[in-house]
Length: 162
Image: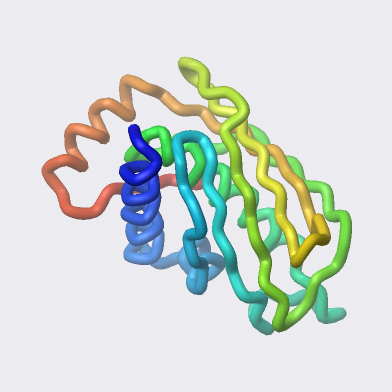
């Protein structure tokens, strides 16, 4: 898959996330895809009041969701129509950011095995590393092949980021 086709594919997956609605769509409603190549995705999201905790900083749950969905998008950049289910997610919160700042997430696939995918997502506000996380997902390649074939018949691919 070329960088151009990876970008196009990840864009379609993001559209599918928005079309499904729900929590992921809420957390990613204002995301702009900056770049996507196989195994590496970068996006930017402006921090709005909806993403803040009680003391005015970005909410840890929202940042954790960025690690979850960002890692899933990095997996999708390999051409996956579905990205499996989470088996482990760990986030370290390193600095604060608040309303009006722009968050950039940098998501990479560290290893894509036969059944597990390991990702790392770094979250920045300007030059400041706000959070870093790892996300492991079960990715059944046989199931994904069936999903690829089914999605070829549909206009919008699917994604799972449980």
